[in-house]
Length: 194
Image (cartoon, rainbow, N blue to C red; front, side, top):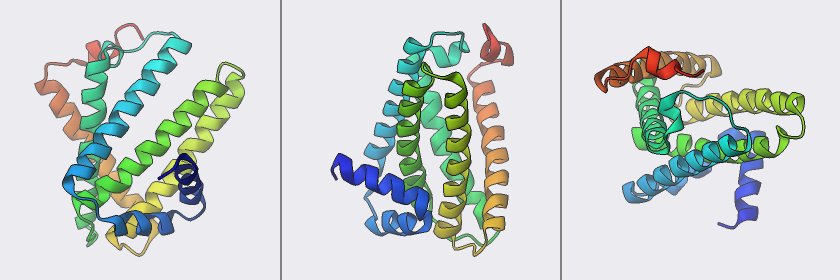
């Protein structure tokens, strides 16, 4: 797919998220392609994050300051989110498979890279405009995710999708906190120098 095709699909994702979800799900990539796309968006997100730190230096938690730990945390969070949004949807008779949810989240992470890159250009020019762009990007991202969840799980309701999202985020946060605790990361280490 060309750059123009990716940008066109990104715009279509905002305008008609359900259509894009159906299109992406119809592709049915194999596990190898899915794993490659997963690795690509995690690496791209890490590169953009590190680039933004170079352009706008400031304190960050030590765990995020190290590129390798950021990659691991980013990848783990994405995988746990896909798992949590798959499992919690089962409470509402959701029928989406982990691979399908992961595919849609991978696409959203790719869009996130575009938003972060745009913010890297906007923030140095105007903090107010950058903050507004971030708020709009976040709201649009939630809207897309709700539509994606409703489509992949066949929930038939954005309200059910919102419940799945809330429960999934709670489950993912709990799982992530347990994993960080098992890794020996304490809350003090997360907030040092902030």
